Image 1: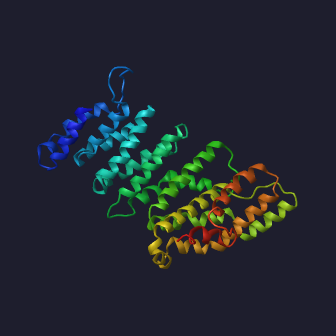
Image 2: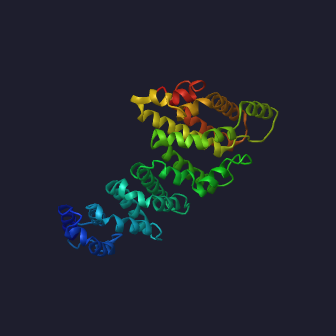
Image 3: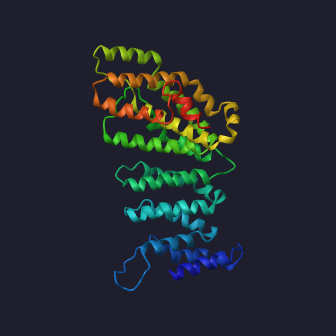
Length: 341
């Protein structure tokens, strides 16, 4: 513990790029890296009050004591994300989140693609503990917010144009899919929705980019007014088909939630958002009437349907929107986003 504090203080006292601390950063890191992740094997009753968590935090502070560690620390943390040991994965995510914030965009931009690919592996790995996946999503949010550069499309393009993400959205929005067939499908959908939501909530620009890329298509996949009028009629006549594409519905709701979060953040300047050419607000308005009919029809079909899966999955998804406003019909979209702005 004391050694970690000494290194931290020395690195902070000599920030000069041409100084001795900078010159010997590699050598110092070679020693420090042997302690990561921190394993604490002292037994109870040895007279030591230091815990594994204390040592881990102390080492994290050393890694964040100078930006000179960045070329060594980030590759180490990303490599440890592939470890089979849960502790190594979890600590790597915690350290990575802290280091991204400390090292800043100028240094982190070179690691952007590797950071995304490594986090993606964790987020979509269904065999991992949910706590690890949540930590990876938090780290992704930090990476999006702090890995900024002169090319503001860098990180968003890494995600939106990622082949795996494109294929997952294409699979989810397949018109043949209605109720998801397995728990694995549902977990993959939730992971995808979380990634897309985090990306869209990061800024007005990111929200617009995500909606431009996917929103209109997803809403159209869920259905049109004519589709639902026909489905309601079939349902009344005893048809057992479940018409709603749950995946497309879920992602549409997630994007609406992201719009609301962006609107709340941009409260003071929301008039400019509404007037901006091609903004997410205008994209949403173009689909507003269709959305109102869709959600009204979902509730109507669900109230008449005898299918438990339909009632449970679709109603819970659509109900998420109604919890924010008293008028679920006309205001189901506008009140959900705009009444609080």
